[in-house]
Every structure is written in C-alpha cells, then in structure tokens.
Image (cartoon, rainbow, N blue to C red):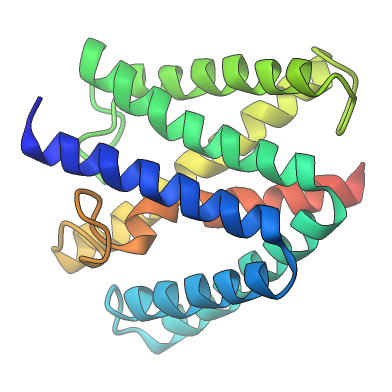
Length: 210
C-alpha cells in the first residue's frame, strides 16, 4: 500500500469522525461547522476562477448548499445522513470499480473517470442506501426497497457525480490538480466535498416535494 493511499485513508477516517461528531452535536456546533465549510470552500472556489460572474454564481450556490444542509439536518436527520452516505458511497464505488475494471474514459474533463467507475458509483450507492434504510427499520423517506427509493438514490448519486465533474472542469481549466492543500492525500476541501455540495441541495428539494 502506497504512502499516498495510507495518508488518504487516515484523512478520510478523520474527516468522517469529525463530520459526524458535529452532525450529532447539532446546534451552534453544527452551525459553526457549516460556516467553516462555507468560508474554506469559497476561498478555494475563488482560486478556481477569475471570472466575476462565475465567482458570484459559485458564492450564491455555496450559500444555498450550506442553507440546505442546515435545514435538511434539522428537519430530517436520517435523510441528511442518508444523503451523505449515498454521496460517499458513490465516490467510493467509482474509485474501487474504476481502479479494478478501468475501461473507456467517461469524459476528457476528468481523465480518471471511467464508465466502470460510474456504474460502480450507482451500484455501491444502491447497496449501501438499501442497507441503511433496512438498518433504521423505518420509512424516513419512502417505504423500504420501493422503486421510488431506488430512483432517489440514483438521482442523488448522479448529481454527486456531476458535481465532481463540474469542479474537475474548473480545475482542468485552471490547470491545477487540487483545489487546495488542506487535506493530506485529498487536496483541498472542495476536492473532498465537490459532489456533496450538489447532492445536499437536491435532497433538500426532494424532501420539500415529498
């Protein structure tokens, strides 16, 4: 196992523990956590573009994402955790399947993205999403294993992947590998939450519809 991979795994465990501590504590602790994420993400976003319009659109979207996270966590904690789980499992499935099966590239925007990775993202998301709903033993969104639940998982996973590609596009345009150096083995904060900042708002909107 390479040193870079070990560093990445240790950082991932640390991020997961810290994140769920703040989610569990809630209140002012979670609010400060969101504020920190917003400030750091905005600084990294500023480093990705010199276009004032795109910069302002990014600021507005980041603000909407943070507000969505605030309300989703307070209105439906299980759905909030579910969304994070789908986002993380989507990244994990894409990484594992992409490394194992490789195959044709998905897009030139992000050379590491493959069709096998995309399929892995969906499979891992569905698998862990259904396990989570079974573990809770309560329909926090919809009835267990319903087609609608599968569709919601696929929507969240798709938006997560598109968010990843969008940030990759701006990194490629700026000719940089990472959005920052905050997280060892990962790069910047946006490198780690690029999909989540898109999946949280879509989950918030889904909850409003349901």
